[in-house]
Length: 223
Image (cartoon, rainbow, N blue to C red; front, side, top):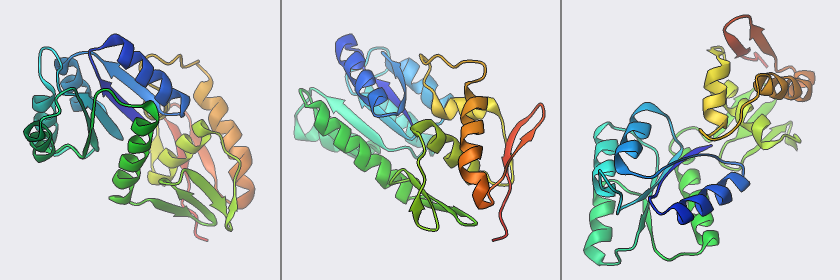
C-alpha cells in the first residue's frame, strides 16, 4: 500500500511519515500543493493525506484537481480550520474524511486503515488463484484457509502479481508499489523478495515465472 502525505509542517510531516512507514506502508511526502498535484497526477496511490493550508496550491484545489481527473484514491484532510463550512467544502470536493489539528497519531492510523479498507472494498478485496487467496483488506494470504507466513513486502509483491495475473509485471512496477521515494531499494531487493515468495507459494501450484528482460508473471491456475 502506497500513501502520499502533503504537509508543509516539517515536524508533523516527519512524524506522520515515520509512523506510517513503521506500519509497513510505502510513503511519499511533499511539502506544497504543486508537488502534491504533480505526484497525484503521475503516480498511483492507495491513499492521500492532504493538509488544507499548503503553499503554492491550497489543499482544496489539490483535491479538486485529483477528482477532476477521475482518480479514486481515498483522501484524508488534515486541517487547523475547525469551521463547519470548511469541513463540508472539503467533503463536497471529494475528500473522504478529515482530522482537525492537533490530533493523536493513533487516531490518524485508525482512520488510514478504515479509508484503505473502504477503498479496497470498492474494488476486489478478495483475490484468488487456484488454492491461493489474498485478502487485500485484511492483509493476509491463505491456502485452503490456512494462513501463509508472509512479510509485508512479500504480501505487496503477491498482491501486485495476483491482480495482474497472466500479465508481465516489471521490477520497476513492483518497486513503485512497495517503496516510497526516500526508501533505499537495493539492486537485488525485488529479486530476493520474489525468490522468498516463490518458495512459499509454489508448493501449492501457484507459479511465478521470470520473463527475462521484462519482469515477472504469475500463471493463472486452472484449479
